[in-house]
Image (cartoon, rainbow, N blue to C red; front, side, top):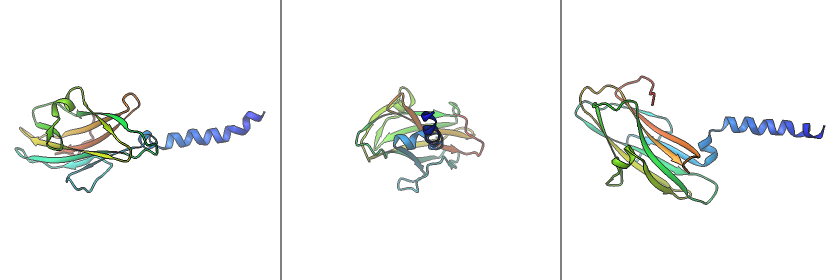
Length: 160
């Protein structure tokens, strides 16, 4: 009957694991902003982009792990619709990485206690119906995925 002594402790550990999101346990944080300097939010943001206009949006990922090792990351774009209403471009600094992000993904290394910021240039073209755009970060590919999202010109839920 001694194994029953460990049952309450094991139950607490299982409940704790279910209550804490995987990214928090894995040591990464994703945030989005409408301006380069913030304010930064861990939640998706609504943005208004009039037809014919463009807006710069920002997304960053930070390695907050307690372990001093780098993480391998793959960034891909996810959209709620792939229609002609919006044009989305991705940049790392001044370098256009759109082709990578919109196809196989943009691979990079995220060092311990460092962050990387990316810029999205979203242009509302014809019609400007709601569009949801997300940056999906596969961390140590095969381990877990974290997402930062924007919702342009609408307030309906984003189904990506």
